[in-house]
Length: 212
Image 1 (cartoon, rainbow, N blue to C red):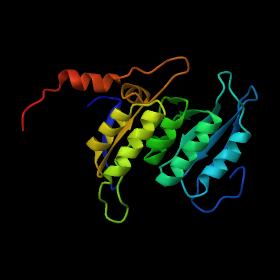
Image 2 (spheres, rainbow, N blue to C red; image 1 turned 90 degrees about the vertical axis):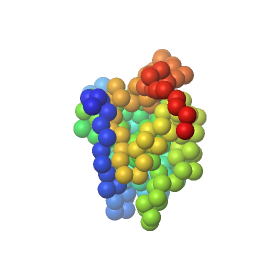
Image 3 (spheres, rainbow, N blue to C red; image 1 turned 90 degrees about the horizontal axis):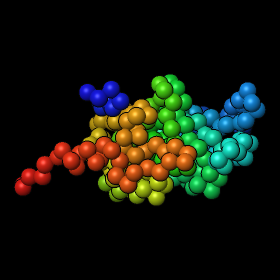
């Protein structure tokens, strides 16, 4: 088993007053005085508006974007897409901090919507397929949309789709920085991702097509 990629079997406000279990946004100020937004908790309706307000208080970095730290189990896909729109308008560098996990809609939508994206040592990105909460059935159209969104944001839509398909609804892929980079999901300032991520390129090299 590769050290940076693990398959898990799954049973599948600091700024404003927040409803119970909603995502919390707070400001983190560095010793140098720069301010970042830390987002924790489940993605719920209304979080896009709160994220937009929170980012107004964050400092712009030298390369332009504001910094957003993510630690979330995921939540509403629709709200996550609305948050992604906010992130696109503002320009955001996304980091998954040490000991944090960005999972589900946080990973497949919020993380890939960062202009620059990284995972600190000890942090993780967890990707799985879309499924209907009521029936547990996989939702293919949702997976396709999420993969297309990742491609639009400069991440690998092909890798996102491959991960979702491989995970299905009863498992998920947990990756550190090296694993996410291998699938073309991270991005450093000043560096362009290869058109075909290394893990997908390796699969194409070593897989053998057979007739059905």
